[in-house]
Image (cartoon, rainbow, N blue to C red):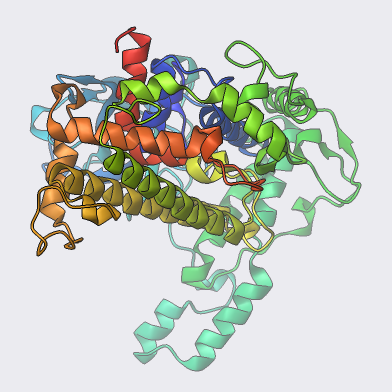
Amino acid sequence: AQYVPFIGGVDAEIVTSLCDMLASGLKPSRDPFLYSCLHATRSHHLMGLRKKARIHVKDGAVLMGGIDETGLLEENQIFIQVSKHTKENNKPAYEVITGRVMVAKHPVIHPGDLRMLEAVDLPELRGVKNVVLFSQHGHRPVTNMMSGSDLDGDEFAICWDRRLFLPRTVEAMSYDSHSPDETGLLPLSVLEEEFGVTTNEALVRHFINHAKNDNLGKISMLWLDHAIDKGSASCSECLELAALHSISVDFPKSSIPAKLPDRLVLGSTFPRAHWREKAGGSPSFHCRSIVGRLYDNVLHELKVMSDQDESSFNWGGGSDKDAMAGRYRDRNGQIIMQGNEEKILRAKKSLFDPSLVHRLGWSMDGKSQDDDLHRCLLDFALEQRNDFEDELVELMNQYHIKSEGEVVTGCVLEYHKLHQRKRYDASEQVKMRFRAIVRRYRDEFLTAVFHVVQGNIAYFGGEATALSSEDIFVEDVSVEELDRIEDALADLTSQSTIARVASRIAALYYMASYSPELHREGDRTVLFSFPWVVTSDVIHLGLQLKLNGKN
């Protein structure tokens, strides 16, 4: 649980929900939603380690860069104030980093792209948070020394972990614009300056030239192979490739292609490191570098995951048989939303917690309570669950996502071939669509709370108890009213009418997804995210009461 707040790639609200569930005593081996999310996140980060060697650095941050407009920062000084993972007086807390820091802008191709700078604390700049400010002084902008950055929205990686500091700083490469004399071609900007307009002929030539000479990926892979072969990125081949990489990056804007000399090209018979995963049967060798050993460890973990069956995996104490909830795994070991109906029902009987429903305000049989209200709200909860799950399945099918944990966290292990080349864009689209779905059903939940508080049971199809006949069919609730209810739910221990009503509706949301009696007959598709992503803050109260042994 201590590492969950630090995981990347997952929306902050989902991370908060997962942390609350773990803090409330729920174990991944006992809850299918929690298990699916953590499983998807774990798989995603293992794949990131395998493909990109992405390692979490606790004493570090990735921040957008800006210029110090006050002019107070001296040359080679920066100012950074980052969020802390703890709150102070229930408010976000920030920490100003001071001392030596290592700064880079990805990709780091030239050894000089890594700069050692001095982080300082200036009271005049403390209003700037989660941004790195650079000095405007010096013979050359320090940002230009890092991959030629010009602060047009670039992000920088900052590290203050001394164990990762460079023993020395290498002179930065020159990233000045390359002259058209090198290729004999005039950039579009020059044509615009000379002729006042970009001609169609120039645009066509630029497009064809780009299609013929777009070799950025090839240069990057050759740089990697030469660095492995020579044991250093400071070799002459890597330095020359770094210069070509800079030209190739600017090619869409400059129309100056990077001409790759034959002496830098490595043929298909040249052995590559095994972690390069070179296709086509190319020769490889087992590389024992840090990256090679990391790759071997990741492959071992992935093999363990793919070899697991429903009764073999032990996570958080006990078998994962209950958390699997009758669902199947795909060839990558991911938990898909289809399963065996008999096992699904058997798992729900084991997982469903009537005491949680009771602590949130309902008795299981609805006796000694408003029977009409209970029936109407239960029907409403089932309708909301069905609509939510239909929309979620539609989103998953559109992007060929099979795992509920993947779509909720955004940590998709494998996209359809149509989305493979733009994985980042597809991931952001999935997250955006999922957030919109959750927001819509959260508003529906708050609207339901409003109508119950007002006594408007006719909204749910029941008989009105307090409002006049002219008011009972008014379904639209103002944004201000929804915000007021949302604010009231910030303190669920207040025992206000809004808090009590919200808890009772959240209990029915939980029942709709977990109760075996409410499972759709003949349905082999099972999802558990509905109550957690829509009302997790409310259900968390019931879990806390259970953890503390209170009714």
